[in-house]
Amino acid sequence: MKVLLVDDDPIFLELSKTFLEVFHGITSDTVNSAREALAKLEKDSYDVIVSDYDMPFIDGITFLRSIRNKKISIPFILFTGFGKEEIMHLAIENGANSFIHKTSNLKTQYSELSKQIWQIVSSSTG
View 1 (cartoon, one colour):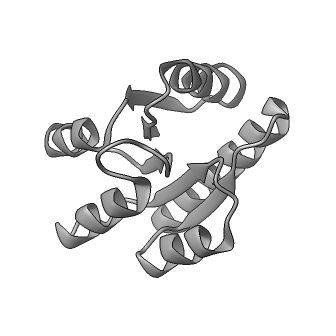
View 2 (cartoon, one colour; view 1 turned 180 degrees about the horizontal axis):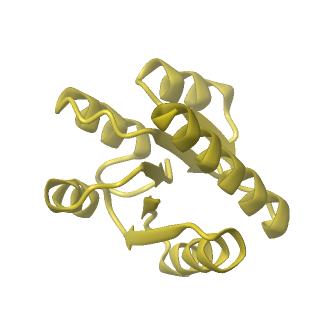
View 3 (cartoon, one colour; view 1 turned 180 degrees about the vertical axis):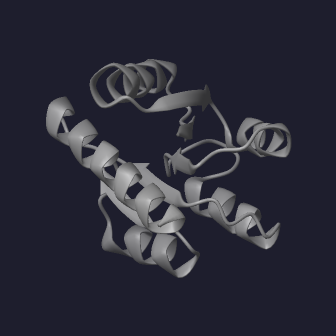
């Protein structure tokens, strides 16, 4: 299984990659913008995209819309510190498979993220 992590915070990206790989056995690539992610999606294949919402230039919802408009059906998880319900609704309306809120409890946050990733991959392959 391979995940594409998209976040403009390099420290958070590295932390996410480490937690997912070391503690949950999930391989990932990281990019720090939606533009980079779009370029990566043209070359590589992924089982799930995990994207932040609040990024410069192209936010997570706009990124989600652009991949869905390109008929890219890779499962998408919006992983964000923005807890507003309207963001969650926009994500789901635009084709996100899941929405996870970033918290200060890293163990809980990454356990939930890995659980969602495994569930989404299992349901799309099974």
